[in-house]
Image (cartoon, rainbow, N blue to C red; front, top):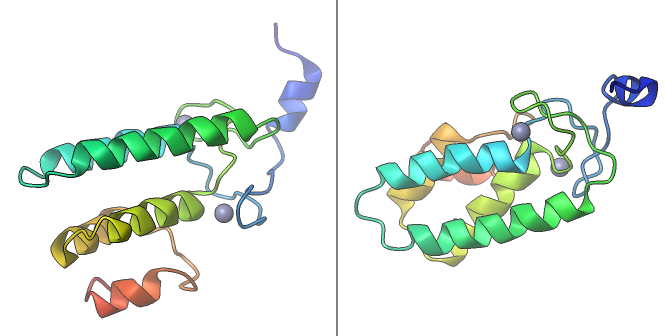
Length: 132
Ligand SMILES: [Zn+2]
Ligand SMILES: [Zn+2]
């Protein structure tokens, strides 16, 4: 049954649990993970992909547990976009860097998953990698 308050809740934007900015382009961590997983599986010669996916899933699990009130995801419609796409992809980018992923893969990641629209975060590194 549709409750009035859940309808109202879908009308507003909750802030990202990480950067504290309103989540304007809500794509939840689970949906982003599906995209990242598809991208990872396209990398034929990348031995760390399973390890990375495991770490990403642990992080998604953690954000799911935290999301009491979250913005509704534009893709799956579930109210679990508790972390904005920027913070989530930033987490994955840092994870890739910590695993000493080579520059070609880092560059490809940012070509597919660049949510740094304000160019204040990893865009600088993207520039150095020659992505943008
Ligand atoms: Zn954020
Ligand atoms: Zn979703």
